[in-house]
Amino acid sequence: MSIPAKKMSKIIKQPEQFAPVPSPGAEIFLCGRGEVAFAWNFIRKDPFWFLYCNSGPGAVLTFEDQEIRPGRKEIILIPPGTPFQSRCEAPFEHLYIHFQTGLPYSRVKPGVMVFEPELCGILEDLFSTDKLSPAAVYALVYSALAAIPEERFTPEDTPPDDRLQTALRMLNQKMPNDRICRSIGMSGSNFQKFFKQKTGVSPHQYALKMRLEKACLLLSSGADDISSIAAECGFSDRYAFSKAFARYIGLPPARYRQAAHGTKEHREN
Image (cartoon, rainbow, N blue to C red; front, side):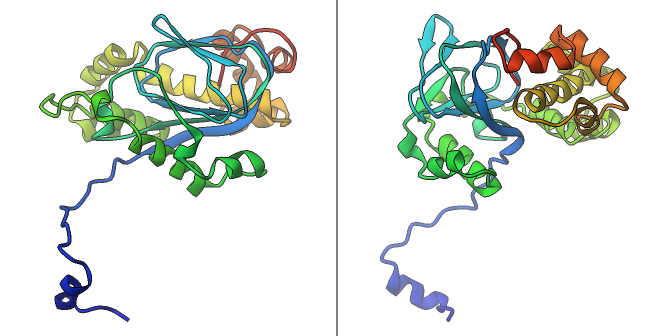
């Protein structure tokens, strides 16, 4: 039964009214879970968010001069543009989420944030079920974003520029460059310069990198054959995939899979 608006003030004493709250627009484009039992050595500085949660100790993250060893199911949140390194000291089960956001979270300063597992009560489900629930994964992302302390944000008077996040979101959706240029109000040449200045790579190189990083995940944590992985990652055939993969990773896909399940070092997702 609906309640007339005039009676609401009698039910809620001195209600606090809010203007419409804009959505931060979190969009997950890579997510998975698997055991890390290899070197897990990598150096990153990417234009998107990382959220990590591990089943136990074993991971080491280095930011500036600080070494961070996440505990059991602590939540690691890393904003875009953060330079960090990682390695594995002991095997652990690894939940990883790569995502993008809009304002106000595009104003968060680079760094590595660690939150207690009590932040979100669904962590047990994320590690105990065979399949990850999309709603649970997004709930974890939004809970982590909501926990960011105010001092981590740049001042509101800093002019925001969400053009890069818009471009990244559209690239992840496999939209053509001309449509991206229209959305952010840039010519094709200016977009190429702007994107490379912000990320260090061209839009084409970024899109290829995302496809190959997805392939890394599938090779290291799945059992699909290489031809199927090539097709899932958007390559025309196994030969084209193997050539691009070896150029980017330094190993052909079959040897990378062997290394991921052995002791050889390789790049993460």
